[in-house]
Image (cartoon, rainbow, N blue to C red; front, top):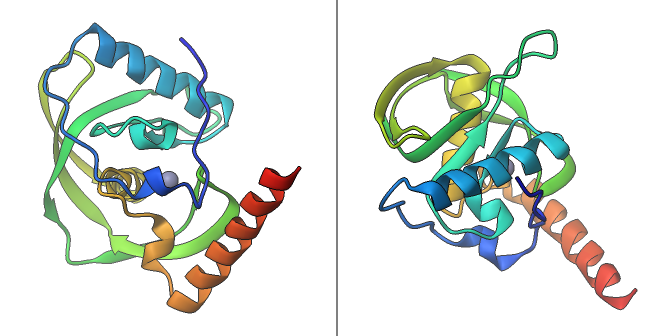
Length: 172
Ligand code: ZN
C-alpha cells in the first residue's frame, strides 16, 4: 500500500467527471488499498479516487466510531437507486478542502447498488452518517464538492481563501 497525495481546492481535476471501472482486477484493488491508506493517514472517513488524481468511479469509506473496530468499505461504480424524501443535515468536511466545515442537507436515507472489492454486485440501504458520507463521495465522482450545496456567498468566500493559499504556496 502506498500513501498518495490528496488534491486540494482549487485543483481543476476535482471537477472532472470520473469514468466507470470496467473490470475489478488487481490494479483496481491496489488503487483501493492506496486510497484506504491515504484516507486513514489523513485521517478521514471517506475518499474518492479523483481526490488522489484518478478519475475512476470508486471510493473508500470507514464510518466506524473510534471505539469500534475499523470497517473499511470499497465501493466501485456506485449508483443511488432511491432517495428518501426526508432530509437530514450534517456538518460536512472534505480532505480536499482542509479545515472548512459547513452544514449540508441531503436525503436522510438512500439505496445503493455497487461493486465490492472482489467485483461482486452488492446492494445496500444506508442512513445516518453512512448515507451522508456516501452521497458526499459519490458527488466527487461527478465533479461536485460539498461547497456546491451551500450558499454562493459562502462558497465564493471559501474559493477565494483556497485560491489565495495556492498562490502563496506557488511563490514560496
Ligand atoms: Zn470530499
